Every structure is written in C-alpha cells, then in structure tokens.
Image 1: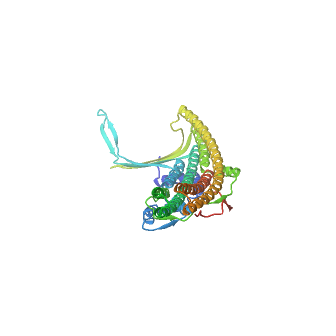
Image 2 (image 1 turned 135 degrees about the vertical axis):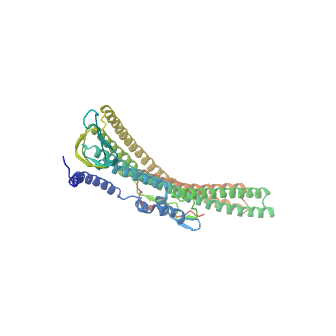
Image 3 (image 1 turned 120 degrees about the vertical axis):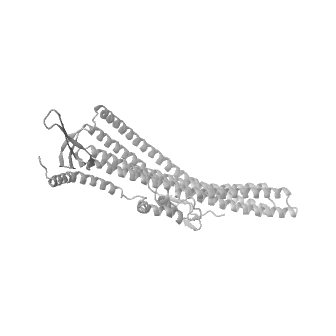
Length: 487
C-alpha cells in the first residue's frame, strides 16, 4: 500500500486535535474551577499577591525592618507583618502549590504521549551459494527517524475520580493554611498581650523602687534624729535592693517577650519598636451556641478534616474503577533514507487495553481505600468533638476571667487604701518598718494580680477566637471604665 506523506501527517494531526478537544477542555475547566476556589476571601490575600515578587520580598525582610529604624506597632500591625513574613505560613502556601500542581498532573492522563527516536539499521538477504545468483545483497538504510504518539480518550472515570481526590486534598491544604494562620494570629495576640503585661510589670517595679528610695531616705531621717532604730534603715535598704533586683528581672522578661514577638512576626532580628495598644477591658458579644455553630461552619481544622473525608471517598471511587479498561488512539510515522532506497511507514488506530491489571491487587487496594475512608470519617468526628470541647472550655474561661478582673480591681482598691494608711502612719512616726513593708507588698501584689487578670482575659478572648476560627465582636460596654490603673 502506498502512502502520501502529507496526507498521513494531516490525518494524524486532525485525529489528535479532535480527540483532545473534549477531554482537554474538561480538564482545563476543572483546573480553573480549583483556581477560582483558591480566590476565596481569606487572611492571606495580601501574601498571595506578594508571591509574584518572592525574591524581592525575601530581601525586604532584612532591609525593611532594621534596628536603625524605630517603629510603633499596633496589634493589627503585628498580625499583618506575621501574615507576610512568618515562615510557617509561607511553607504551607508552598504546600498548597504542590497539591495544586498535582491536579494538573492527574488530568494529564488525557493529554497525548509523544515518542521520537532514530533507528540505525542494515537490512538485506543472503542467498545460498548453490542457487544461481547466490551470495548476499544488502540495502543499508543508514538511519530511520520516527515519531509516534498515543492518547487516552476514555477510561470510565478513573482519571476524573483521581483528579477529584487530589482537588479535595488541595482544598484540605488550603484549610490547613488557614488553620496555620489562625495559630500564628493567636500566637501574635498572646505574645503581644504578654509584652504589654511585662511592660506593666516593669512600670509597677519602677514605682516600687521609687517608693523604697523614699522610704530609705525617711528611715535615715528618723534614725538621724533618734526617732527610729537602725533596724529600720537596714530593712529599708534590703527592701530597696530586692525591689531593684525585681526590676532587673522584669526588664529581662520584657526583652525576652519582645524577641519572642519578633520571631513570630518572622523578623527575629528586629527589636527597635514599641507597642501602641494596651491590655483591653472591652466586653465581648458572645453566646456559646452561636460560637459553636460558627466554629462548626468556618473552623479551618474541621474544613480540612471534611475535605480529607471527601478525598478518601474519591480515592475509593478511583480504586473501584481500576477494573475498567482504557480506550485510546495511537499513531506513528517513520521515514528512512538509505543509499539506494527511500522508505517510510505510518500507522494509526484505536485500542482497548488494560494496564497491568492484577485483580487481587486491585481488590486489596479497594479494601485499603474503604478502611482509609472509615478512618477519615472517624478523625472528622473526633475533630468536631475536640472543637466542641475547646469552644465550651474557652467560653467558660473568658467568663471566669471577666469576673477575675472585677475581683482583682476590688482587691487593688483595698490594698491601695491600706498602703496609703500605713505610709501615713510611718511618715507620722507611729508606724514601723514591718507594717510598712507588709502594706507595700500587699499593694505590689494587688497591682500585679490586676494586670495578670487583664492578661488572662485578653488571652482567653484570643483562645476563643482561635477555636471559633473568626474574631469575636466587641460590645459597646467595658468591663471597667478604666484605661490604665494609676497609683
């Protein structure tokens, strides 16, 4: 049979284009669908845009935040910096891209596979010497370049099931990224509040040092005029030294808290900044039932677990379809140039095939997929129970912390009045050093307890927000009408 080379090539190209149109179009639609899902509103929109300039952003981490530039950070500023620079978030975003590319890899089964090569051959015939004209006659072909391709047209849904499974895994990774952002925001808030508490602690000890310096001067004055014994001077010196030591320790705690905050923001070497906010005394709009319903709807951990269940279902569907064959087309063309002849060949056709079908292995893979599905469902149910418990617990902790603030404020007012009285008695010369020290310690501890109650309240609110998955709203009321506790 004679072949026209141009007609053969045109026929192969037309066949491939027609066959590819439906499958490739469907695959592209599915991939685009995933891209659209990835555009949903979330905390990392800004970081997604910055990924276009990854190299530039990486260098800006060092150049933008240098210790020769002083900045003032609010809580929202720290959160925004962490979302942009925290390496844990960036790692999860890269993990998203890995699974996003796997969706396209799954759909690649519908794209043609092309092979090309060159065969070097020497062919001919050998005749018996007993036959007239015996001997050997060879036709040396030199080289034979060839090209061939094959493409699957239909596989009874195996590729689609696999692509759907990978897409669910990709969506689970997106939820994992949101959960990581949730955790980073929680870490930022708790560390930010701890820095504010450490600052308040330093402020308290600074006031204490000033008080003991004044008391030491008073003790020396009373001793010099013979109104007090030397023991009062020694006691005042001891109290001042201990207060100075506590101040040094408090400043060390503050420095460590700032370093920890810088690390979570992703700029660990930057420390030349201060915080603009204070520990909050705002009341929150919260209802435990609404909090639970919201958590079940939007908590990224639950969404990730649910997507894992969906992925396990798609995997089971794909394994069950391994029993089905593949329907595809193939085509090839070769052209050989020899020293005497010009030979070429072409082929094309369709095929129904099984690829390494092993019924026992496929059966066991189906069994494995069923077990994986049951495991994913159990993990999802366990995640729901954990979220329920944590939301309830953190809700109770928030209510308890609010009551602790009120009690701590009452104790602080009483301690402040007691300290005012013992200070007046000592100045009048009727009080002693021990009474004065007890009053000072009571007032000191009451101030620290009040700030600690405010810290616990803010941390409890941050914990509840983390468990719900979204911020909780402020109410128009304050727990206490106070912005800063003054002496």
